[in-house]
Length: 157
Image (cartoon, rainbow, N blue to C red; front, side, top):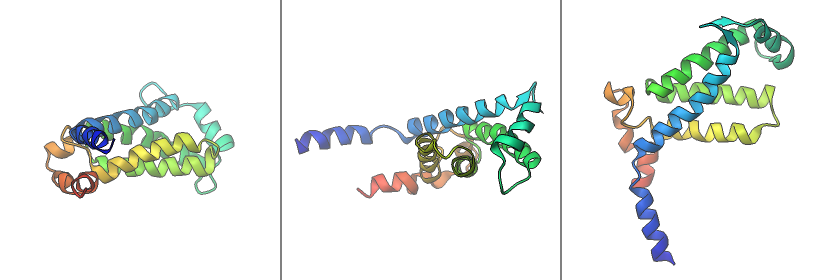
């Protein structure tokens, strides 16, 4: 049984990080981007309903509602776009992780399973990097990813 498990693990080790990293970048980004699109009309005009939600339903104790609405709406457009193209990926993932924490703590505390899945994907990107199919790699901004994070953990086994 151990031999079969080791054989399967060896096959799993052949899955390129680039494949996983692309999925980890794109799918969480789409969740946030879709949320951002519900907050605006047209290209980027914040809806009246968004102002209302941030003032009455979300009501963050740490920021004025109008500032929170602008920051969240901007972040939900900008950070996912950066993650999808793989530019500043680790920083964009860190920003979305921060948003996830705020949403979990102050807005929807009962949605911890969903937020946990988002956080897991974002942590994986922060630790493992954007992969070769990214502008970060193309521009030489994340060249050390193979020697750090998830890649180093795999190599250490």
